Image (tube, rainbow, N blue to C red):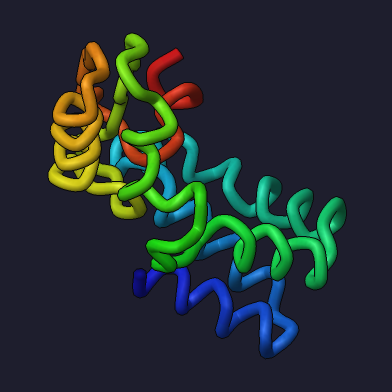
Length: 132
């Protein structure tokens, strides 16, 4: 939650560069950040060039909130999934969706009748990039 507040604050103050720096640091594992540290400034610059403040504000406001009445809130996902098979993945260093929250989601889906396979990778939030 604090990460999202930081992102919103940076965007509200018109500081897209700070938001992108925060996003990269919050989304990746220490190992990944160390390995690619020299490339991160270029990634930030590209992020600033290809995005807009309004676009990033819209994405965050539509996807990152704690409103349990929203149809995409994690507490409502089990009713959407039903008894279908589901893979739930998480990163051991994920600060946006920590492993305990991933496991909570897996349990809720199982309780809703889904067949769940849960895996925690050595990664941050960007698992497909860190563990392709």
